[in-house]
Length: 168
Image 1: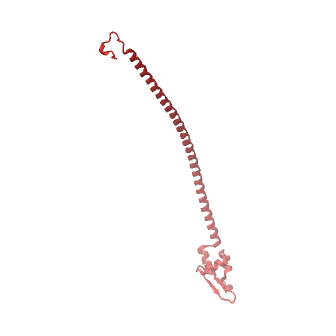
Image 2: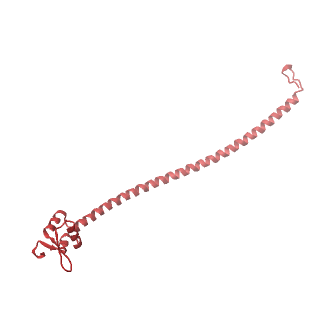
Image 3: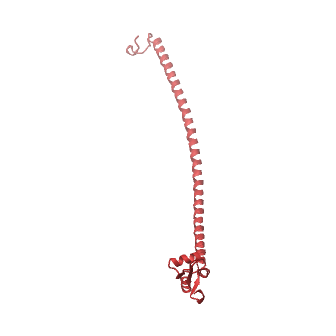
């Protein structure tokens, strides 16, 4: 059987394929390798046709190499993803700096607006005080004019026609 060269053990097939005996048996069950099963009293014995192993190797190569290639491809994908993450991180860091600059500008603007509001409020208070003082001056002026009118009301001014003179 295994000695005639056409059939080999699962261990020999596993060495040739770069995998384990369990994987060789699963490959046989799935139809990837031609296997036969001998029933024995204690355990079953699996054998694999050497030609099916050679055919599989010609089409697919060793499994450990394919696994290594997948790991390399995975490492390359991880490296590309890491590069993309680093680019995003740099872009976001630049955006954070830009936003911090804008925040400082807004803070300065708001402080200037607060200062302008304080000056405007002080100016309004001065204007209101000036208006009150102007109103008081107008009242004093009216009283003075009224007192003057009263004092002059009974006097006749020479060379002024009588109809223009004030009547008491």
